[in-house]
Length: 379
Image (cartoon, rainbow, N blue to C red):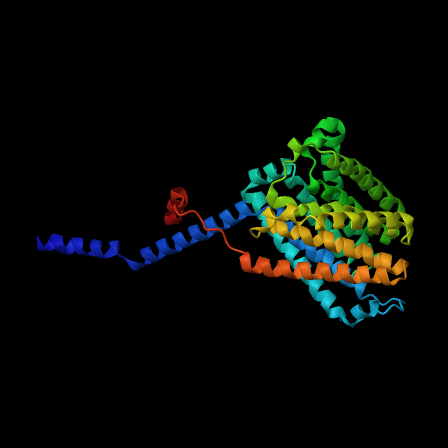
C-alpha cells in the first residue's frame, strides 16, 4: 500500500502544475481579443470613411486659404497668419485616418467577406465605396509634397481614378439598363457620392493640365447628376427608403454642385458663369436645408457616425466660396467665404470632440468558441 501511494503522489502534483493554468489563461485572453476584433469588424462599415473625407477636404480648404495671393481685401489676410506647419499636420492626420480606416476595412474583407458583399449590393452602402478614393484624390490635391506636374502625381491620379470608373460602370450601368423604375427605387442622397467622385477626379486632372481627361470625367459626373437630381426631386413617398438616422446625408444635395463649380473652374481656368451657376445652386440648397431643422431632429437624438455627413458638404461649399471670392471682389463675396469657412471648421472640430467622447469598443461574445479553445489547448 505504501509503495502504491508513493507512485500516485507525483501524478497528483503534475495535475495541478502551474504552467498549464497559465497556458489556459493566455488562451482565453487570445480568444477574447480575437472575439473583440471580430465584433468590431462586424460593426465597422464603409460609412466610417466620412471621417477621412471630412479631414481631407479640410486640408484642401486650409491649403487654398493660406496660399499667398494678390488680394487687397481686408478679410483674406486673416488666414495668412496660419503657419504652413498647420497644413502639414492636418494633412498628415487626414492621411493617417484614411490609412487606418482602409486597413480596418481590408481586415473586414478578409474576416467578414459576406458582409462586405452585402454592403456592395446595398443601394446605400455601395455609394460609400467611392469615398476612400475621393479622399485619396483630395489628399493628392492638397499634398504639400507633390506637384501636379510630377510623374508620381500623375501615376497616383490613375491609381485613384481607376476604382471610381469601375464603380461607375457598376452603378451607372444598372441605371442605364434597368431604367427609371429601378433608379427611382434605389436613388437616395448618398447616390451623389458617385457623382462627387467623378467631379473631384475631373478637378485634379484639370490641375495637371489634362483637359481632355478632365472634361471626360466632368461630363460623366454631371450627366448622371442631372438624372439623379431630377429623380430625387420626383421620388415617390413610398420609395423614401432612407432611415431617419441617415438624414444628415441630405447635405450631399449641395456638395455635388459645389464640387461641380470647383471642377469647372479648374477646367476653364477661371470662375466663369458656369461655375457661378453651380455655386449659387449649392448655396440655395444649403439655405433650404438649414431652414428646416426639424428634418434632422430624429437623427440628432443620439450620436452616430452619420453626423460626419454634415462636414464635407459644408467644406465643399466653403471651397467654392473661396474661388468665388477670388473672382468677385466684393464685401458680400468675402464675407460669405469667411462665414462658410469658419462654419465648416467649427463643425469639423465639434464632430472630432463628439467622436472622441462617444467612441466605444464593442463587447465580444461571452461564450467562447469551443473549437478555438480546443485548438489553443492542443498547442
